[in-house]
Image (cartoon, rainbow, N blue to C red):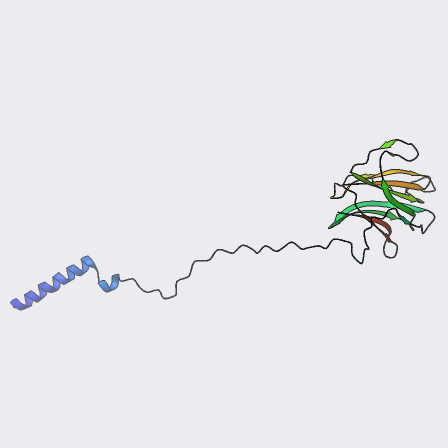
Length: 208
C-alpha cells in the first residue's frame, strides 16, 4: 500500500512539472510545409539604348549640297502663284519650302551681303545671321493678276534652327519676289524641285 502511494506521489509531481515547463516535443518549432519564399529582387533599371544615328543628308534620293553658287533653275510656267511658305528642321539640315499653285518660277539662289533693301520701296531690311542667302523668283509671286493675294501667311520667320535663324521677304513686285535666308554660317544649300507627286514645291535645304 505504501508502495502505491509513493508511485501516485511521483506521478503527481511529474504532472506539475509538465504544466510548468511544457512538453518539450510541443515546444519545438514545426517545420514549414512549403519552402520559404525568397525576397523579391529589385527590378533592374532598363538598359539605355543608344540614340538612333540618323545619317545626315546628302543622300542619293535628295541630292547633294553644293557650295558652288549661284544655283539657277528655269521656269516651268510664266507665272507661279505662291500659296505656301514653310520652314522646318531635320537631322543634318534646315529646310525652307515654297509651294505654288501651278508650276515653278525661274529662280536663283546666291550669297548676299548687306545692306538689304525692300524691293520697290528701297527701305532697309534687317536680316539676322552671320551669312545670308538671297532667293530671287522671277514669275514667282503671291500677287494675282486680279489684284488679290494667293498667299496670306507670314512673310517673316524667326525659327532659331541650328543653321536657319531668319527668313524674310525682301519684296514682291511686278511678279518677282525676293526672300532672304539668314544663317548661322556660310552653309552650303541644296535645291530640290518637286513637281511629280503632290503640290508643286521649291525646297531649299541648308546644311548644319
